[in-house]
Length: 245
Ligand SMILES: Nc1ncnc2c1ncn2[C@@H]1O[C@H](COP(=O)(O)OP(=O)(O)OP(=O)(O)O)[C@@H](O)[C@H]1O
Image 1 (cartoon, rainbow, N blue to C red):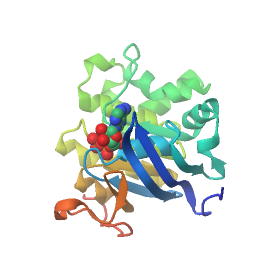
Image 2 (cartoon, rainbow, N blue to C red; image 1 turned 180 degrees about the horizontal axis):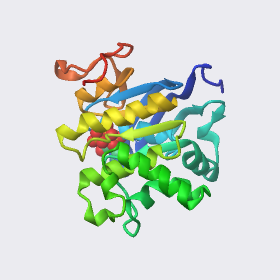
Image 3 (cartoon, rainbow, N blue to C red; image 1 turned 90 degrees about the vertical axis):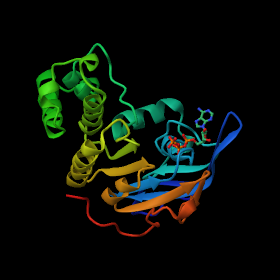
């Protein structure tokens, strides 16, 4: 095993994975640099979620290696992978998974509270993130009293609240109206840039690529330079335009 290049904070090499016999990844290699916002783009079923789960230690690939700095994630026992995810990574899925009994601020503060932060400090930090994501006025409401777009903003606040080293965002704007998407992505990516957080942003929405530094395309579980049908995905290495105003 050879550790990844020094400027890659996260690295997957030769990743293969099947779900119950169905191939999802067919030998994908990808590296994310420290502080980079890397888009993983591709159509539905391309393997984006499976790739993020392998890179974040939620899944152990059938073949291949995953490195986070000098840690060989694919060799870690489950408890160590859980700790890594809890302490160093943040995850935003395509639908918000909030604790129904907790208020919005308690949900957002959960990683801080679980890591032993003082109640008042956790609440203040969580409320700052809710404000930045335009849901500060929902802080005392429970998930059932929020609309899906508000719940997703709370989930994004929860991913940011501990300032993790890497955020995995799996189609994070899926539950949002198009008018909300740019604002939420701007907040997420601006926060990441300010705090030097590396972001892996999986999406099938080509507009999202404008918020990334670089994209890699996946098709049918493999890296691709472009998607079928001449769809306008940026090729890997193309520095995108700046995010839309
Ligand atoms: N739990 C599972 N069981 C069986 N097959 C699965 C499972 N998860 C994913 N797959 C299959 O693996 C392939 C890759 O799925 P994956 O969700 O990684 O792709 P994706 O690019 O994230 O798609 P989407 O954009 O729809 O989320 C697909 O063919 C999918 O049907």
